Image 1 (cartoon, rainbow, N blue to C red):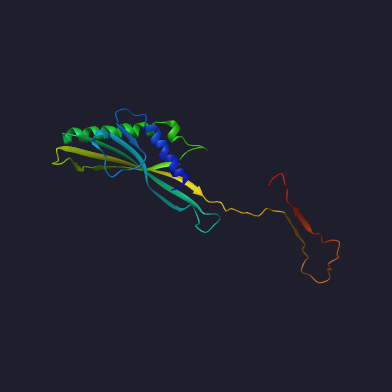
Image 2 (spheres, one colour):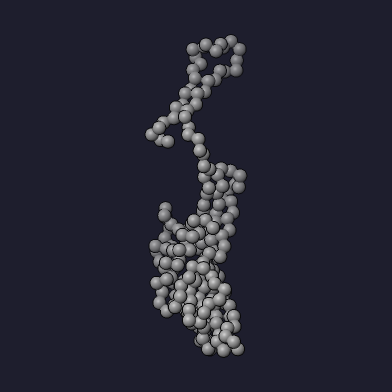
Length: 192
């Protein structure tokens, strides 16, 4: 993942970690959550898809990056109807917290991303407990953030200067002709 993807994930996590009512917060998905950790909120990078920004073979490698961050809310209750309502309220609060924060969605030279290009909600109802006596529900909010990244070449050599001499391609001019002068470009140590 690019550094920008990690910055976006961390910015989402930092804002959501201030929400009340959760027993645990994580930056990684875990295969099994313990009942004592519920309700639980996790924020992690699901994927990053990079496609060329313009011509793929022009200049340094440069991409439009779609970073998908998953926000997972897991709750456990005895009544599935109460569970479904609570988890929808959680996600509504999360969307409001993120999308109304001008420091998060603000645009300009130091913006984290250019756009929120997609939001998808997924509901998962895995069974838990020995005989299904406890219901768990996960509502996963997947938000796709669009950003750009480029990879400028690393050039290990310093520019020391160059001398170019040119003669017109015509007959009658000699190399010592005073109308022909070499062009000398020297390295400027103040700009290197």
